[in-house]
Image (tube, rainbow, N blue to C red):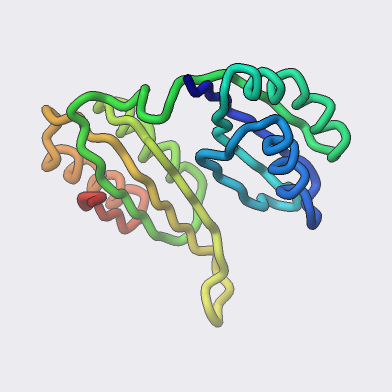
Length: 177
């Protein structure tokens, strides 16, 4: 039976970090089943779903601290269940996109509203880039959410439109399919 753990690692970005961590996982007899990796500021951040048999996942759990120290990373590990275990039954996936001039509070306003409706955020990516010519900071948000089957999508859209009007953010909701 497969076992699972979520490994997190953060440290100064440099070439070879993903190689070091992926080799550590492979040497333990495990597989990277899902992952997100990004450079944020000057830091490399990794979130990895590790899968393997009981002995393999135990080897990752027991050895992750030493592997992280050797690579100059701050690491964490938490055993978890198989993918999909936490998915709400009957939830429908939707994509939420937002775009605006950057300012504080956009992520909090959107996620607070979703939480009030009992909507789970499955994935969320945000970026700030510079506008061509002016260099003004432009904010973008892309999320995948799980909308409970009993939740009114019209109410979801209306609430996000209200946030958009107040925060001056263009927000779009559409099926993730």
